[in-house]
Length: 332
Ligand SMILES: Cc1ncc(COP(=O)(O)O)c(C=O)c1O
Image (cartoon, rainbow, N blue to C red; front, top):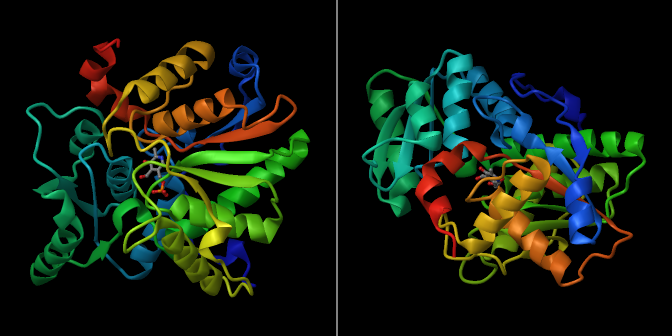
């Protein structure tokens, strides 16, 4: 197997991120002891899981002598905001293809995209990948050398970052003498989950790796767990790791898709308020608020016992709360 430390990365994230106990929340819930991995504190203009992925993706872009990053996401994409920040840090241009149409006033991540100087291109959400390719072609004709990063940064280089993050976390946990029964996190484009799974195999984590699905189901022509397995196998081959992954190796919970992607409902709102008021931890309306709402519901249903330890991996997203100010006013 290749040494994980041998892969090029551009150091941008503030690592290692801390692991903290959420004692007040744990006490209130009378459930398992809950710990939190603070990837909301990776930096890069507001924190989040994409800072880790971008270290490897930008290193590859620089290796290819690119002068421009192109990526895509929703209007409140954390991935787009951190890509714009990574571009600034490396003196690269940045084109962001955003799904939907521009709001009257930019707020949250979108405001940060503008402050960071990214060029914004709006398109129908289902057209984003194609629009990125067309834009890349246009930029090449203009003499630029674009590097296209897939939505969510979830290719094998992005996933590699989370195999490395698993190593970091297991080292921290062993020093703390904590062995979580489950690691719970928001999962969407899959790079985080696939990387964690590969890291768990390499470094020996045997508890549950439970992805709370934000917007993906395991049915239809592209079952999510098949995609996760394909991505993990792709990373395994990059690492020359003699391991294979099957869809059934991945645990996802699709019970909390709520009102759809980007739509904050009562469960997310309540979870965000609870974490803010018990622990002064700010979750986001799209990803971590939903994942925490799922975890809270599972604790309520007795899925975890009081003797168990659960690590909630905070993957970031807090800048988006400002774009949901009106939604937070709703009380029902
Ligand atoms: C805050 C936050 N959490 C979780 C995720 C999901 O991570 P992944 O796309 O690697 O599944 C994202 C990415 O879209 C995110 O922005």
